[in-house]
Amino acid sequence: MAELRRSLAAALSLFLPIAFGVGQAEGSDWIPVKQDTRAGLEQSLRLSLQKVQTFSSPGDDQEALKALGKEADQLNAEYRQRMSQYEAFQAVQSRYDTLAQRLQTAIDNRDNLARRVDATSTAIDQVGKRIEQFHKDIAARQAELQAYLKEFHWGDILVASVYTRGLFDTDRSLNTFADDAAEIPLMQAKTSLGGNARDRVNQQMGADYLGNLGDGAMLWTGEQPLRIQIDAGTKGTTFLRLKRFAYFPFRADDGNTRKGRPSDRVKVQLIRSMGDLDALLSDAGYQSGVLDLSASRAAIDATESFNALQPKALGDTLDSHNHFIEDLKRSIRAAENEKELLTGLLKTQKEKLATFEQARQAAALEFRGIQEQYEKEEARMTKIDPSWEGVVVRAFHGELDGLTSPYQAALRSVLDGSKWVQQEALRMYAQSGKDDGRPTQLPDLNVTSLRMLSLMNDGDGVTIRVAFRVKEDRSRPNLPPPPPALMPKGDESVGSAIDDPLVADNAAMAKGRLTLYPEPVEAKIRVMNIVPRYVPGIALSCGRYDVEVSAEGYQTWRQWIRVCGADVSMRVKLIPDK
Image 1 (cartoon, rainbow, N blue to C red):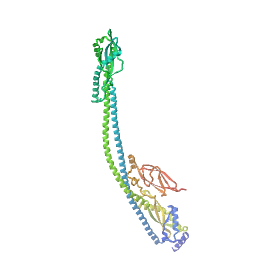
Image 2: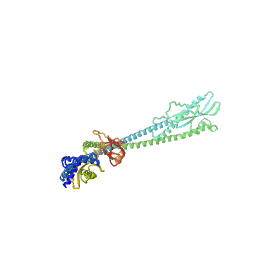
Image 3: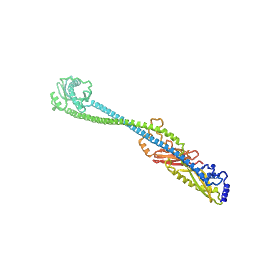
């Protein structure tokens, strides 16, 4: 056995530079592993083995394990301390999220009700304009009716005159005598016909509707009088003259009415029928039966037909007017009722809006109280590395043969068993805790450094005990992101983040958080198709997002990522530039 030890010592002296023993304090340094690959481990192991001078004793091995246990306990205590700080931060963040959501709800309630108040006010204004238009329509229709009545032609009146033209008479003088004599019966007819027309209007429109309308006007139609010769004798030629007058019962008299003057030379009669004409001729000493009065009869019949239609035409016009006015009045009453209801609704909405505004101000005040505390905690937490870190210890056995040195056997045994280190690290990670905010997917655990605890001769080979320091590789800070800032400090007037309530409801139902873990951790992340800047855990509405990750010295990574309802987390490892 002594010979074997001497041969091992000689072999080690051939392959390893002489420095100091493994069990010495100087040999307890951690050697960094630049890259967690077989080549990286091999390089660090070679550096560690170069410091070995002699084999370790069991006492050296136990002493190294004891020292390592204290160091591992210290690492675990530091991690637990970081996690306790993180849990305290989570409590502040939970309160922050709750108050932020409460403020957002208060803002949404206030803004939605404010929009309804504006809509109600607009509706009241529109109803008021409709009522105003209805009154204008009534006034316009009344003015149209007044203009219609002023020009309404109630009927025609035929005035028959019988006179004899002597040797020295002229037609002009005789027509003047006949017109002057006709004024008296025309004035009487005007009074009678005017009363009938006014009674008809007052009956359908109400008393005193006519107001300041004129008392009526009897006007010559402009039609040439019908003159019929009925006799010729020594005293002259006797004529029957029929002259037509139109009666406008509501037109003001122009003041040019001729004054009636009776004349013994002219007999005058208002003709409403052939009976009136027969009576006039009989009074003048003529028999209508022996005269050709066909033209007179035609004129009388036409007048009777026209006069029979006009009262009905007036009545129909008044009825149509009344129906139109009544419809407008019903519309006005309905609009006034609607306006009254809207006014009551507006009053209720404004009272409720004042309550909502008070709730918003209270929520804003409460939110500002937690916001300052949250920002301080967030700034402090960004300086804390929340990555999990542990120590994995493993003893590896390397067999010796005539061609293999202890150095090579130890090195090969560690490299061949390095996969076990990753598996053991994952097991330790899973057992270290579930409520520390870590991603739910399996992490990347990298060996960051190693320490050779002992190298012992076990008879048929060498046993090398190595401690591996394993650390979780994730982007820092790996903290749940704060919600979007709803209120800048000092701002008392905060609008809703989403104006349209339907859009707000849909967005709240479909939002998910996006978190990227880039390598290297200093990489810049941008979401190209939205305005807000990317923060870890940014809340996004359902959709596809153009994400770009870039860093100096690395190729830019860009990809479309779909976020809809569920949170999305992924690692992005950039490729170095060649």
